[in-house]
Image (cartoon, rainbow, N blue to C red; front, top):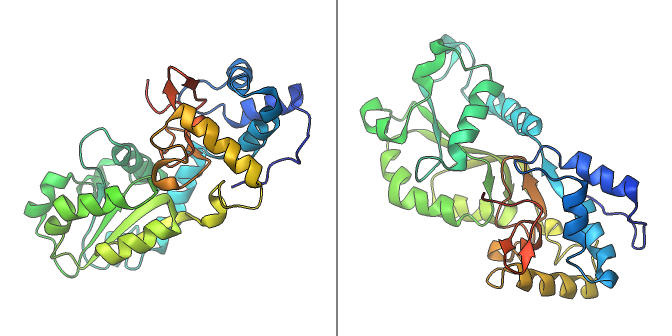
Length: 273
């Protein structure tokens, strides 16, 4: 979480333009007019708090995601860009329960970020349905790719229902992600055989309801607006209270005032069309 400006800082043209520039890469346009419309959903006395929330947003660009994947792959034990120098066989798979999820787009980004897009590297990238006939064993490595792990629930469920059985004979299985919460990582390690490798590790200080940037009055106010945006998860899924946004989507672990769309609320970073 980024440090917001001091309470009472003016919400002037320069500040609004700074936000618009920062968020310009989001999949749905986030311009100055939309930012002002979002702020107007708050009562006047609460707009300073809303502005500080925008200051604190961790916006992860496409370039930053690619850079994360470029840094992670060379750090994995046994990997080398030259096939003869690798330890065993390597396969890369999207960690998705069904087609069209974030893992698919992340695998594409991962491949290009690591200069593996040419046809000569096609055998490295397989679909989940190909795993059994690959015949991978204890000397081989599978790298699963996704963007984010918030609570670990989806990761553990997918492992228990699908991937765990398919990868039971594989020597090393990594889950590579751009970001993950520390608590979720602990759960994944306890409930699966995955070695999770994040580029960014989030802690309790990244929760707006637990960090030092917002006081008790702020937290109560954010929960109040969160209930308008999404009564079921006013603090974000799993009460994670995050302010993280990826250029391609916003996790539901992020507070709903930033992404929810309903009759009573219009978030800046809509998750769906």
